[in-house]
Structures are given as structure tokens and as C-alpha cells.
Length: 441
Image (tube, rainbow, N blue to C red; front, side):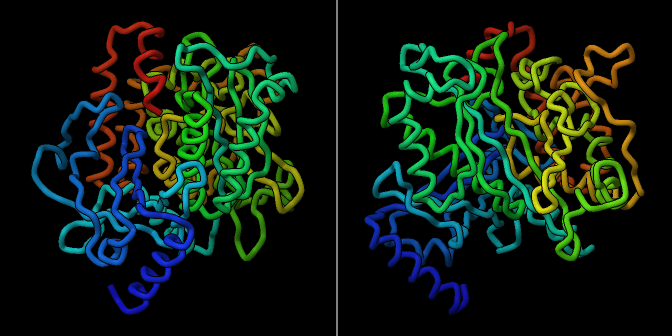
């Protein structure tokens, strides 16, 4: 730790202490999509910034149920890593008085980056793009379902209805207030389709920042829910047979302050480079599902005619397309990956999409004809995306693109976790899978 870092640590500790903070939670998200954490007393912040906080690399092969598998390169009781908090994101938790939160990067004991650090993977992909003159603005939609402790819904209001807002007005006010107290730029909050389901959208930021923010948003919603006697689930399937929780990724690509998703000569204002980027993402979607729809329960959500994006196609403002182009005004134009869900590690998902898009730019990829309306109703529908985690894993294992982007250690750890979860839930019914994963995410 140099003098500048030491000064920042002291200033951060003083700022947090003045706001009543006594402890800092450091979080990372594992390959099963579970946010894990360790915490330190605020008085130890400078030491944590200087030396890191110890944790085991075995968490890279944890499954959704906390059982543990192994990969060729990770697993077992040996080894140690260090967590280093990103002080630029350190913030008091509005719904957890006395606590602050910061995302963490993971390093080896010798000070070199841990090759399976998912947050650093997202940063590497953003840096890879920056070396080519490309930057991104990204944001995740966060959908969740609230239930009472006995499993019932706290509102019987209709989908998207003002009735539901009335029933839970105090709760939603507290969610909104807590998010904004944490300097999160809320764009909108509203009831969603399923019973007790809501959605909040946060303003776009850089890719790593967007992933950080979605972790913080979800933690805040959990905490506010608990204070209201409710439980919050971000799982892709909360109730088998019902609409699940998506985590749609919005992304725009920029070169020299020009949005490549608009103002071009191509379809709907796409420029050649913007189309190539989206063409790369669309082509890689079957393999990307292993990162963005990574759970067995993900495929209970990813079904046709449910606005989940079950077909490998794109379209302008088409909510049934896996890749939805949102033309909007020039600054706001972006693409939405609709087939991703709340089981995803947000760092892996955004990093994987950037890697796929860059491959599309390198190859000069083009988009096929767009799909209008529900692809399930077409005489010749486009290809279905994988319909099971096993199928997505097969596409992932064949992906040289993702193997190169993730690096061997992280690629193999993800593969091992996906394979183990396929085996974990083999033979279980949709109801059993939903019940087993409902409160894990």
C-alpha cells in the first residue's frame, strides 16, 4: 500500500465513522451466483487495505446449495487468497445501520491477481475493449419477489397495478429511499408481472460499476424487506410454472463519445461496428447462457411467450427476442440481453457479453434478419436457445471465445460448478428445483 492508498483508507474510515459505521462488509460473487462476504471492524480498514482479508479459493467451486465440487485447477482445503476492498465504492448501508459495504477484488498471497476473480475478469474485458478505443455503459434490471414468512404474497394486487403499489407503498418508499441514500441513481421502480414481484432500474455506468451496483441493490432490497417482515427472492424461478426473475443486461458501446447503437447507416440507426458487436453477442448466446442463465432453475424461466428471450434472435423493441434493440434517443440507445436472470454472477455476465461483442467486431459479424412479434408463432421460428443447463454447458465447453476470455482457471471453475449443479438436480421436478433455489439468490 502506497502513501496515497493509506491516505484514502484513513479518509474513508473517518467518513464512514462519522456516519455511524462500525463494520465494513467486503463482498464477492461466486460462480454459482451467490454473493459471499467477510467483514472487518472499521478500525481495521487501513490494515485490510494494506494486507487484504483472508479467504479460501475453494469458494470458486461452491454450488448453489453450499456443497463443494472441484475443478482441474481449483478445489480442496489448501491455499489462501486476500480480499481487497474497492474504497471508491465503499458506502454506508442505509437499511443496515452501523454497516458499510464495498466490493472486493481477490489476489493471491504473493500479491498477483487471482486468475479466477470474477470482478477482475469484467475489468479485463472492459480494458480489452478500451485498448481498441471502445467504452461501455451498462445496467442490470433487478427483479424480485417478496413473500411473507409463511410463503404467501403480501399483496393480491394485479400485475403492474397501482393496487399493488398501494398495498406496499411504505415498503417501496423505504426501498427507494435506501437506494438513493447510497448514491444509486434510480431510474424507475414498479410492480412486475408475477405475484408480489417488483422491478427497479438503476442508471447506466461502466461495466464493473454496473455489476457492483446490482450487488448493492439486491443487498439493500433484502435488508429493507427484512425490516418489513418480508423475504426477497431474486431467483429465476420462485414458483414453478410462474414467471420468474430476470436480470436483463442493458449495454451500449461507444467510440469517441459516439454511441454505436444509433446514428449509423444500418438498420434502426446501427452503425457497422455496432452491428458487428451485437452480431457477436447474438452468435455467442448459447454459450453465454452458462454465464447469464447459469442455474438449473434458469430453464424453468427461459420458456417461449413469457418475454424471457427463449429464441436466438434479435428485434427492435421486441420483448420476446433474446437480444432486444432499444433505439430510443441517440444517447440512450442500447441493446438488452433478455435471456439473463437473477442466478447470474453479474461480473461474469457483463464480461462475457463484452468478450463476445469484441469477437464480433474483430470478425465483422452481421445480424441476421430481425424478428417481429413472438418468434414462437412464426411458421419458421429462429433457433431455440438451450433448454437446459446441460445444453448450455455443452455450448460453453465448445466456446473457444469464452475459454480465451475467461482464462483456463476461471473457465474450468465455471465448467465444474455447472456440471456439478446439473448432477445435483438430476431427476428433480420443477417444483423441487424451485423450492431448493428460491431463497438462495
